[in-house]
Length: 228
Length: 345
Image (tube, rainbow over all chains, first blue to last red; front, top):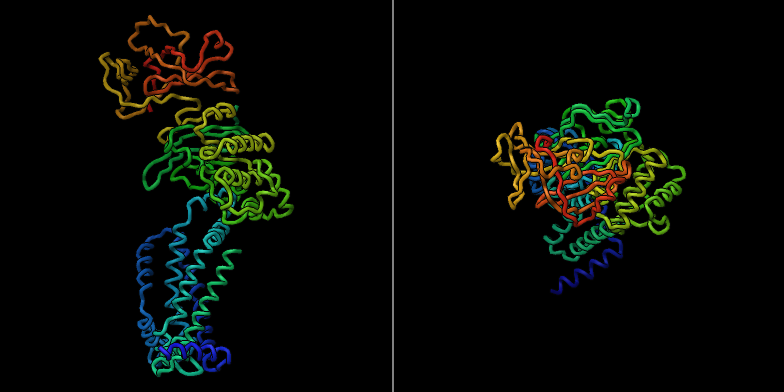
């Protein structure tokens, strides 16, 4: 058990001393997760809203597909993205393989169904009295939609937090699409896997602590927003 | 007299259904500008659907609704700032009381002097601006929430205020304040009120006319008594009867088609002129107990409700002649009406 304790101590030392290797992985993680969250929220929120708010032919089938995508394993997404962006793949000319952008594309595919499916469920479960109230107060179509979204903002925040948690902690996509290249595409999770494999527990624990710290900070900020 | 110019709403050949199930059928109906109309009828009769359609919150399955002489549909600009609906269970936006009331004004870009408008609206429903304006939606009782919802509509100074059971689930004080505020809107801005309520007393007191809705149809522009079945063939030829127990029964001419509902208009029920020796086979003589006496302020008539076994019948009597009859709740009287006056819908 000594290695665990010494791992924690080393972790704190690494964090305080501003170890460049550790902070490089942190920066890579924050960069890809931010891009993928922006993309998945940008696409997932409108899709989820359309699925939840409107009734149209094929809606049930689409929901089933979306719910199935929630269970996509990260290694499978990694494999698909790899196949598409490798030099032989249909998107090979974009040179995305072993780049942070490539990882972000894979993580967007991971986060999109989470954002869209949870948003759709939240919108579907909106109190029918809300729409009636908004029409009664004179809201037009645009105001009705915007106010509906604002009314379920906490639910949508929960969708974003859930997706962010998934993106922040995934290994499969980052490893397969990013290649775990030091100083370049090594994220916190791939670094933890590598350091643990090498028996360097302290580095792994340090990165793990930072990962938890980031997740805590995000949740704390959202909790503050909710109170406001 | 309702002229084409003072008709605020006109309904033409309206039919509405939910998932193919018809819930409302109104061929021709108009509402006068500045009037108060009471909608009565049992739960599920179509009152709420009619109000949602008049509030342009629903698009009718068939037919059309004219507002100020023009056909309008949900979200049309001509109705958005003029017609507003308050439901029995109001939905308050997840924000403060101030922001809830300000919502309608803000989306109309009427943000000038918001605080004074909101103070005025809260005053109308008996809520103190200082105490309530910054409360959040979940910090209100049911009655307070209903009053805030009404204030959010009154602040718009609507041309039409549609109220769906506004006092059904609130305390006595809130109910009184809601009733007064609605009436004040009518008196101050000439707002047309259309009110669905089971509060017959209130409707009798304030409404210019009452519409009774039953099974999705407007039965009449007056008060009708519905006589629920079952109806069975009578021993008397050419009649059916509805047993009241103890050997008593209500006689009626048979319905054109089975399964129809029987109605008797209050104007066809009498007791003063009832000739108890009338042996006419189609004359109904029913003895029951007076359970309610209500003054209809608009006409000065007294509405008398009589309980006869498991049914209640209401009829009218002029107030100036009623004093000699010594009527009071609990008194047993006999009334009569012809079997031929029972209508079927």
